[in-house]
Length: 286
Ligand SMILES: [Zn+2]
Image (cartoon, rainbow, N blue to C red; front, side, top):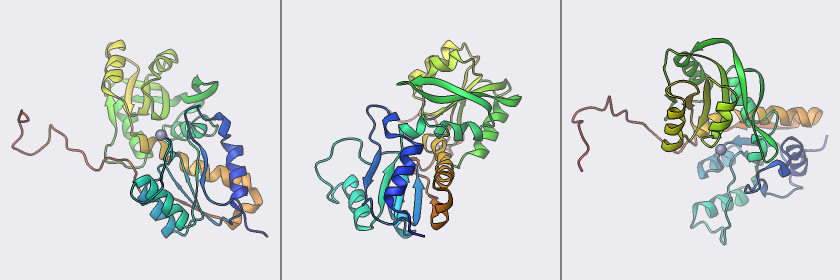
């Protein structure tokens, strides 16, 4: 049987995550590579960082699939003097094709938020909101109500471990059942979260003002908030993308090997809890 080529993978990826379903500002699709090159090893990661590209090369991957774009803004050089340039150069020198499925994977079904909804233990989900005419985020119910603390603990177990952990706003002993999820940055969707009657909203990148105002609107009640980390909430999609590719390529899929990156590309490396920091504590010097 002939080897699968990059052309086959691009066709399969475009069927799963049509590029025209990406948001208008996004840059998705093939970034590097030759459509005729054979593809036997596929590496999947959230971010196309230099370390991930190195990891893909060490795995002898022919194709790297990432969620986040490498080149979202215009560049006039791909020299190794910048990190972006070094990344492109490394991909080309290492003969690794790069393919990006970003906001088109967010609105796909199954897509990024389905993977997060499954990890959160939700049944019978529906879209949280329509964005540019496409369903974004999911809302569904837990099989049985649990306390907010218990739900957060179970979610933490289902997510890959990241240094930032999970930040939770709300009464830890309050019961939650209806859950809204949105992988990645979600603090522009509080109206939809309130509108769907969610007890808790799982997302990431919650900034002070939107989160604080949402808590004020809730008067201490629902929806509670969980910031579960951008990388962690999107990482779950990688296994879904692998499974969907295998299904789409059907009988030809046995010629390929998939590897999901083991690198945590969350930019934070450690957290110091101000309440448990060793002496001398007190006020910061001003
Ligand atoms: Zn993201």
